[in-house]
Length: 386
Ligand SMILES: [Zn+2]
Image (cartoon, rainbow, N blue to C red; front, side, top):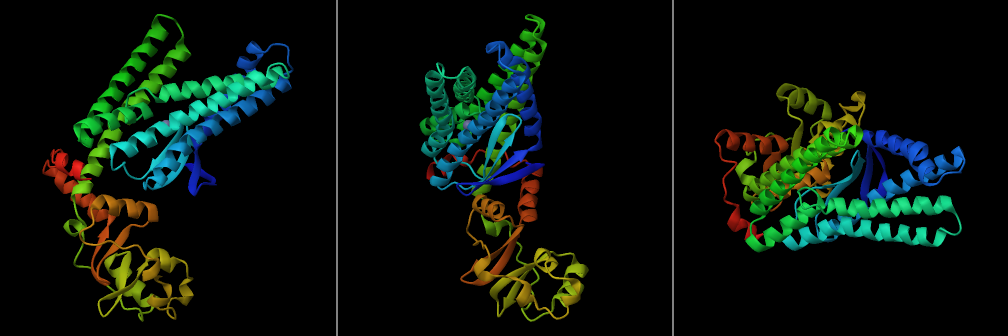
């Protein structure tokens, strides 16, 4: 997700804030301070309303983060890497780099979010109960947060993919039918139905009840769910195809290698500039020693290039991620994403046999798509095996 600011790491997972979040933060803050709290707790000062609104907004987004963290922590615990969590306009999204391997994992990861929202909601309701005789400001903040977290849990449990409830539905259908793809299709259809209901409810609000802002919000949520349902289905279909293809179907066998004693200057002049290639395996007697990319070279000033050797600048073998010929493409793409690299050397017993790049994977799909092969329903058997 573009345009997001990294704010730190929790449990090893990078947390980011999308620019749209700041708009929502201000909107929620102003609505609470100027309209909501003055209406429900009259008689306080303007400063008190703003302080209440500020803490409510802060805790609200903290709650959303707690919801996302619960998904992520359970995903990581079950062996699914999580790249990051981003807070954006609709709350939060966990960048989980691949789908669950079995329905049970899917179910546990999906339920973790709503369950944590219910727990957080109950904690705030307990605070509300005990603070009511002491402070009206604290108790109304707690009441608001309690209700909104319960609401967040219920909203997310609506059985339309990619909402958590849609994932629960998918896990159940997957368990019963044994096909992840069929389960995703049914859950995505559920997502579409729910999205149209939201849009219809929005139109009803505007035309019949005359509530324009509320109606537009409902329709907007519907539109968002609709596009998310479509793209999530495609994402799963893509992973499905990836899971069935192996590295040796896409890797380049014909690639340039460089020796470790070559100077960086010669590498740039004779290889990079002449052929436009950005990454070279560093090889001696067909044994892989490392990989050198433009990224490595850029760390050094140009004046040093004639004296530096490829061996000094390269990323050495022990720090390098590699693939094997029979690995499936889904795992390889996951590895490239989590290591944030564009290519992986393919090795067989320490010897380099190929190079697999993101471009190779994309080309593989482009060809299959042109041949009309991507909709092939061959996943049923491999689903069960996985
Ligand atoms: Zn969730």
